[in-house]
Length: 95
Image (cartoon, rainbow, N blue to C red; front, top):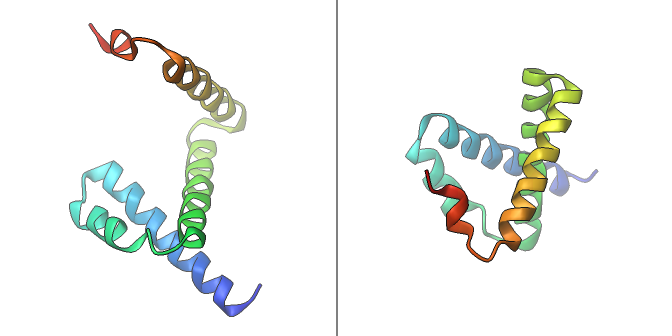
């Protein structure tokens, strides 16, 4: 891995950590950083998504264990697929 690739990966990890921080505690400064810094290039966006997935996978595995994390992610994927194909998506969110 080249120095440039290492720097891209480090920035992506920084962005992903900031995004997760925003999600956990509503840190708007972290979200501002992401919005102003993450859309530089296609490579930067892909690196951010890869880092975000890596951190999320590690957190899920640590919190739930591997099998439960995989089951949860499968459930999210299946329900999201159903929602994305729904004619009336709003009905899924009504009380």
